[in-house]
Length: 143
Image 1 (cartoon, rainbow, N blue to C red):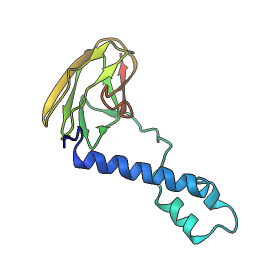
Image 2 (cartoon, helix red, strand yellow):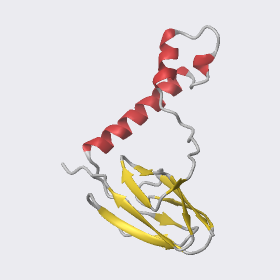
Image 3 (tube, rainbow, N blue to C red):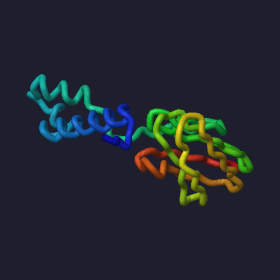
Image 4 (cartoon, helix red, strand yellow):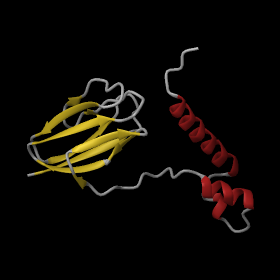
């Protein structure tokens, strides 16, 4: 039987689905904080993954690693004229796509595949993985 994703990716999807089902069954994360919550509900809240993305301060670097279905660091800051290089360290294929700065990498299949792009104009450019749209990153370009 052919599986399009690795075992690790399948487990990540299964865990996320189970967490969502568990939160839905108990009324969501806010339900556990109400007075008189049961121990089961409090446990569900404590172990549920955060669903609200946390803003990350931009890191001054021109190198981004793709690992564990994430761009690391997710937010970078470079000067205009800098070439940024993304390196896939994951077992799964990924890509780098942005409509803010017309850019589209080829599929980066296998470990250690890279893609580079030179940012010439100041601005804030959002990008994502074209294969896994939940993966996001930004490049802040300064003068």
